[in-house]
Each structure stands twice: as structure tokens, then as C-alpha cells.
Length: 100
Image 1 (tube, rainbow, N blue to C red):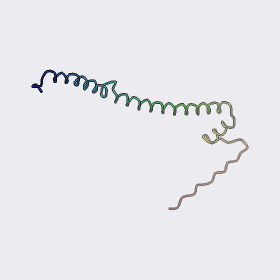
Image 2 (image 1 turned 120 degrees about the vertical axis):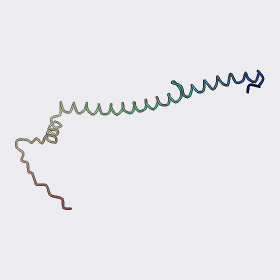
Image 3 (image 1 turned 90 degrees about the horizontal axis):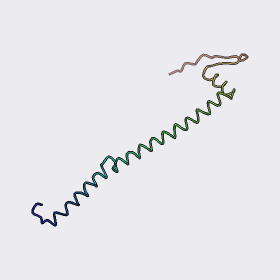
Image 4 (image 1 turned 120 degrees about the horizontal axis):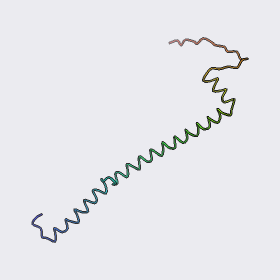
């Protein structure tokens, strides 16, 4: 390599610069690999955002129902707290044992 004429050595300078630029284009802090990782992170965050928006809308509807719908409020009280009306009779049956 050191025995090459000067005009042939001059080709290595642009090739070296090109290799340097190519290396940082792919592997640098703002390179192609980093851009790919950031796009994947963005897609995950957008999916999580969509899930959170859906959950938020569901909770808003439930808040409105709890504030305004007496039947919904009664169903929650019956299901979660076991409440009954004053004129209702509750029958409790013993649980059957499973035979194995």
C-alpha cells in the first residue's frame, strides 16, 4: 500500500471519508438504527395511548351512569355489596359438596 503511486493513494482519502460517513449514518446517535428504535417506541406509546383513551371513555360513561342512572347504581349496590330492598326475601341454600 505504501509503494503505490501518489495518484492511487488519493483514492483512499475519499473512500475513507465515505466509510466514515456511512458508519455514522448507520450506527451514530442519529443513525438509521436509532431511528428504527425510536419508531418502534413511538408505535408502542401510540398503542398504549389508544388503550388509555378507550379506558378513559369507558370510565367517563360509568361516572355519568353512577351520577344519573338509579337502576345502574342499584345494580352495582346489589352485585358488589349484596344489598336488597326492604320487601325482598333472600333464600340461601347450602352449597353442594363436589364428589370426587
